[in-house]
Amino acid sequence: MNEKIELLIRNIEKIIVGKREPIIKVVCAMLAEGHILIEDVPGVGKTRLVSALASSVEGKFNRIQLTPDIMPSDIVGFSMINPQTRELEYKEGAALCNFLLADEINRASPKAQSSLLEVMEEHQISLDGKTIALPAPFMVMATQNPVETYGTYHLPEAQMDRFLMKISMGYPTAEEELDIISRSETPQFAAKLDAVMTINDVKEHINAVKNVHCTDSIKEYIVALLNATRNSDLIKLGASPRAGIALLKSAKSYAYIMGRDYVVPDDVKAMMSCVISHRLMLSPKGKSAYADGEAVMEQVALSVPVPVK
Image 1 (cartoon, rainbow, N blue to C red):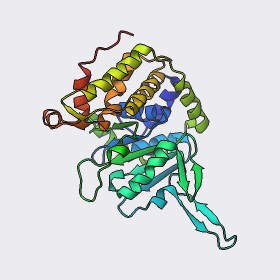
Image 2 (cartoon, rainbow, N blue to C red):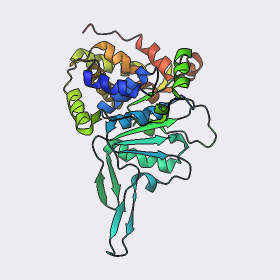
Image 3 (cartoon, rainbow, N blue to C red):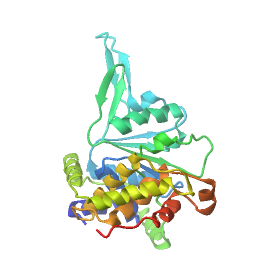
Image 4 (cartoon, rainbow, N blue to C red):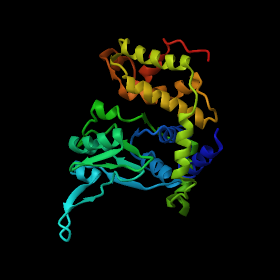
């Protein structure tokens, strides 16, 4: 594994116990310049993971707790007249940062959710005829609870498609849970992590990921996976070309984290489900036969030949 990335992961693991795979995927999304949706039940560490990543990198971190009364101006900012100069002045919203935690995104109204579309896709804010560029890197890390539906607004497909990947934390093992409970008794449990990486370091890693080599055979494998989702009777709506671009970026990022400057088929397999599954609409047959989109994606992938190199 890349030594500098390993240092970042270990720093996060100081407060996130036994969740190396989700941590790697969050870091992978950051290096691929993508956004991530963490969906799981309350209390498993979703918000804590996001905060740990932001604390480990010397960047500006903003958190917004999304509720039905949150307005788009709370996210993207607004203009108001300065009584002294009599001119419009822009007042920053939560999105003006490097890392934006959108907590419980499915509790925001559709109007507020839509205000995130431009900032996630274009990394900019358009307001009153002006365009405001967001700082680089910029990453939205959203959480949502899939169980409780009261007072929530389902994310539309266009919004889901803006997320590079969707992951879940899962419950800890008995040993891990014992460690978590024991740690909660120490003062360090609530302490903020020290930064081990600067924003310039992140930019260098992002540029290095872009230079990771991917052969034509692996790109053809990605295209074959996309086509398989479009021709399966388990899936009503298959993956779009944007999903293919996201999978390529994620595979290159994962290869870099693993210490390689080239992509292998296992990198694509490791990222496939979390990158593609949330973009699929399952057919009635798929819903009845499998638990979720990830299980369907794993099944569909079995029909696609894996390249030897």
